[in-house]
Image (cartoon, rainbow, N blue to C red; front, side, top):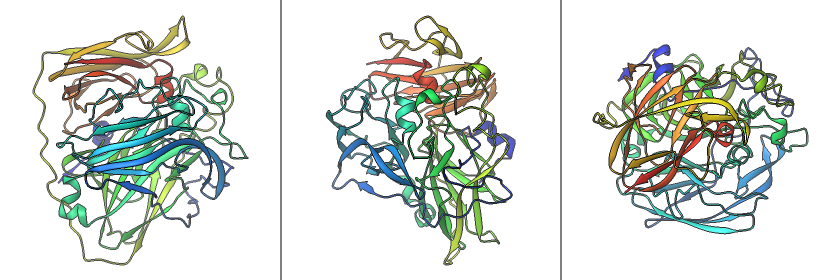
Length: 492
């Protein structure tokens, strides 16, 4: 079993985090020395749709709904009226058929984040545009060799991505398989945590984008775990708790820690690690996921899941003062941890051990194909202030990068801007090779990686199985909407 110290894990981890302040809308305290009052509700997510006889089929409707958000009424964007959206579960080799209806006031579509499935047709095709009042059936097959893991789904129509995700449209997509059958993990109690933030007025209405700091990337002052503030999670004494955590916020980084306790990471972005890694902190940027194990051996019988301070950079006047209103430094208290959830002991069980071996990850072979990308911001004659890749804002009618199917490439991504940027590639997972020329010691598969300001990260990507056009982009989704995205063509 590997143990990383705090500094090593900040460098090697799935990256990112944020500070949270709960607004007067919920009348909660945010001073760390005075814990938030416990919610009486459990963190358990319902409902659940599972595949049967090799098929996952369901109706899914996007609409604005009046929902209960930790005891208050809120008008949010939902799938099937739920915050978070229904959890979908399938197995490798299963067929998926989703009858989708768009009853929003805007066009939309669905991206199946992290799934390795076709990127064209009615599958993970971000270029589909489903108009209000229209329907479309998404249909695809999960490959028989697809890894088991924690994935998710959310809208991805360029220009509306941040707004629709910030409105609440996000749900887990779980692929069951080999990781779930490891005896120690199978015996652990399993909980799913979807982290979301919202910006709401006193009547529970969403603030419009005109009131948000889009350059900074919008953050809300109501932070929820499965639609609840500080829910209770039960852990058997001597047992193991498996937390499957998704950062479904459009901009907020979560720097997670268990108060006075370490935990064990077993997966990144839906992919198993070779063995458990004992860590004190876990950093998740928007879009990232992680699976961790918590041991029920703490004397006090309570664990508080904390969100620690993190500074992801600032656009200064360009990010706050010029945009006006809510959503800048007044909400982003960078000095105060808060409690996201509380883990309490329940009945005792016979002591459970950690797994010693999970999987075997092979390092990708070296490649001679190297591409370079620079992340920055600047002015565009067509859109004004824009976020750029290689000095250019996104253009829907351009092919920014063209690669060959069944090849491996190195992408060297340099962040020359003043803010951290999580970089996401659709359709194909990758391995991080180095940061600022220093080899990455944690061998892992990812689909999103933090590129800190002033940092250069080298990725190694195999383009496998599926040809067609897709995208890569910053997963601070306001930055993607404002131009930090490129079209990627994978040629057969």
